[in-house]
Image 1 (cartoon, rainbow, N blue to C red):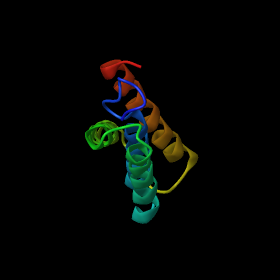
Image 2: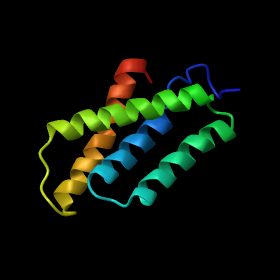
Image 3: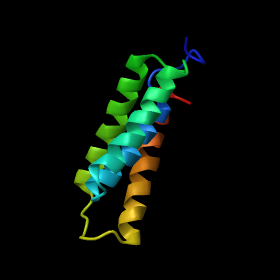
Image 4: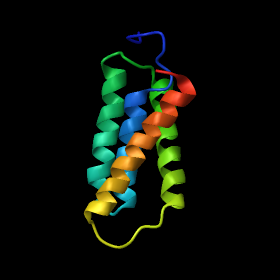
Length: 104
């Protein structure tokens, strides 16, 4: 079923969860954050690129990285460019940790 033999965890689900959770932690509306993450994860299973367990583990990994980094970074109020940079940084960091942990 998966597109390749190295499907665990789903990198797409990890990236989506990291970005969407980071945006939510920075104040984005809940619906705006949950819908893209869910559709990304569902799409990976629907199109046969991942098993459900791959997507769940990828989502958990992306969320864990974002929560760890969010707790380590002090943030001010508002949606400035600095906060957007932090959200993008959370996304990039989660992807780097995923690649370092599980390979390409």
